[in-house]
Image (cartoon, rainbow, N blue to C red; front, top):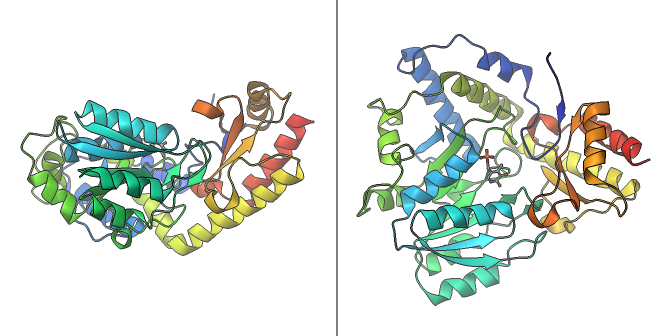
Length: 363
Ligand SMILES: *Cc1c(COP(=O)(O)O)cnc(C)c1O
């Protein structure tokens, strides 16, 4: 039995038919010249979407968390200090990954539902030198968009590389890697890129590549070692692992769709649909968790009204409307819903369906 849902949770988002068709193309070898051509084009399109000229821009063969792990294990050595911003689940995951890589972690925190205060980061950066300063651009657990503009200067003040989680922001809100001076960034395919889950696009700046080359110890993870992976992507085509050929076909098509829409148009579409959703939710008497300046267009947090059972409502949406929205994570478990408007799921139809299904489920 084939089940089709409307995906308006925290990812995966709806996947366009063209992307599913690309996924179903005949599998060819990972060293076939036709595949290598597709791979080169995929890297080129990723550079455009990230806003970078960096050669070391490629999809890691695993989900967004593997991109996170790639950034940390390649840049950190045991005993290094990392300054990590935590204002939700994914900042907490970054801290855990950095600790497992042997780093000493200093946390800067903000309450759930609020952005990190750059002054707090600047104050922590005064206390010592750090190898890495890490921050989540779009915190999918809280629906907060972090303004990245003060972070390059703060990273410079403590000698740190700037590492950014762009899993939910890439292709949904502007992510200008070179302009923002970001040194290491990772994303995922199943959020605003509207491709199935399975790949994690990353990019490393020149400075990050120099730090990698200057390591005293080998990268702790063999699979995620960019010095090895880079030899396959970089031109020598040295076998490292079998590239997930069909996922690359799908990502190539998803990126082609993003660029044919145009990045600015895509950002505007996400903002416009998010505004319509906010208005509709408030008209239903629902309360949004995040204050307007920090709202993340691709993901909205709605407070669950008193006396309403989280699981019952979401079950009703799924079984009666084939609609998936997300439950709360961490501090927001049972207290908030997470409504995604990511990529192909950010349309007027999606907004209308969600509002009418919620009105029905709450009545
Ligand atoms: C989804 C997400 C991740 C993890 O990605 P997976 O593909 O689930 O491994 C990391 N960071 C953020 C901000 C996310 O939204």
